[in-house]
Image (cartoon, rainbow, N blue to C red; front, side):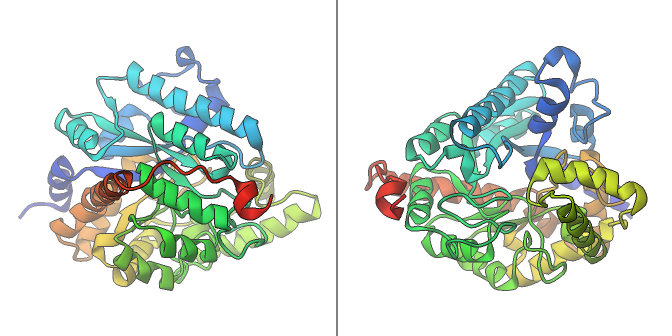
Length: 394
């Protein structure tokens, strides 16, 4: 009888992991100021969750690299920093061209797989990266960015975030137009980080499949960053995808409760939980005297299975959020850990066909769907010239 390990190895040879969100570009910016002489992804980087040897051991065949910038940065600063992140990913794929291949289409992803390289796609994490500009949106697309997360931890002028006080009740008129323009140019609408009402508004507007690049199930862990069941149900009709994340406070109710206590303590000293950098610094100190509970691989398994049950097996994927969080569940400590998760699912009865959908097939189908819609819309509609001042009055 074939062992589970051998079975997963064989699966990954044809259906490697396509992960929805990895923050290595930001980690390299923070730790090494992008200087390639200070780190070597080919040799291994002990201070990150990600490097080339571990990507290979993890069976990763395609990666959306997040070109995230701090959500508290506004206007031109956010746009410029996003361009620097894009520049880094493109430089990284050039430097390690034998192992990585820049991908801007489904065809590129297939070609990378055939050549034995990791397809490297770009995703911009937060609408602040376009500064309410359709031209900036199109420019990021021209540089290869293939999804935009509509918000990060803070609201943007045209969309409410999951972790900020609601202002618009979802999307503004300009926000709906952003979604329509993303459909037209072939940029996936990423609904991780947005409020539940923003999710619903985007789903009602988008003609293309939407995605959650790194979110889990709210029914399993009541965190606003997770996806409610009614939204998961809508993914089937939309053709979209929820890529389950591994962030402990999103997958473990015990860690979620601890984080609520930590956010209360942070608020007492003037630190907002939505302020990503400041809150993370606070938590690093807080947990020295208030140890964080442990999340586990089994917590993530429960979320994957819940998304499968509610949305369907064609609408579940993986978005680990490696290098975007400090602690990770036991058993999922770095990008080499994906085979452990797949083995756990296999032992719970998942077929090879369904595991292949989870790791690879569903993400490929969504990207192809986004491209198909863009091809149709591009033949009938020109670039949007909408301005936020015209549609929203500001």
